[in-house]
Amino acid sequence: MQAILVNVMVDNSGINPLTGQPIIYNPAELWSLGNCTMCTTKIDAKNMVNGTWHDSTVCFGEVQTKSQLPTASLVNICMLGTAIYVSCAIAQTTSNPGGFSDMSFFIDGNLVGTFVKTAPGIPGYDFNFSAYLNTSLPPGGHELIIQNGHINGSQSLILLNSITYLSALHTSL
Image (tube, rainbow, N blue to C red):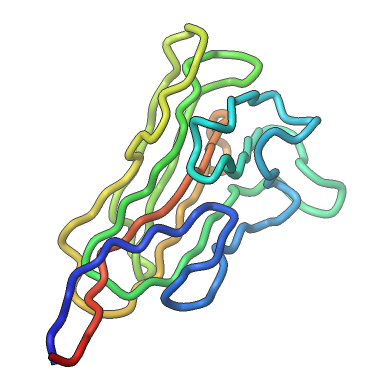
């Protein structure tokens, strides 16, 4: 058997091609598929992988739904590999949408990174921005959780485009 390393890209609205599992967004009511009519984020879809993204803004200090207390929005994906890259669009504006981003990254239940960026207050977006990358995972299965925002924190925006991970495919000679 021989192992070949391959990059596996999982579009934000797609299925993980190696596991057959979708990316999970929780709580679902805090997420929108990009370019929704209620969303303040207006991006030209040609700048995003497969023309899609998932958008979530958390606003602490107010109840986000009638049935729950304020909570962070979460992204969950299971993967088999040794490296992972999270690609987002980053808003440069301070309103409509508010471009402050505050993300935490957990692998297998452990906090492994954060991304905090205050928008400079200019029009536009940074596309294909690596909000998180980790190239030193031990081989095997892993669970990545991305947390947008913190309880009692500032309003935070995430525009998830794709997640790519490095996996070993075993082939016979």
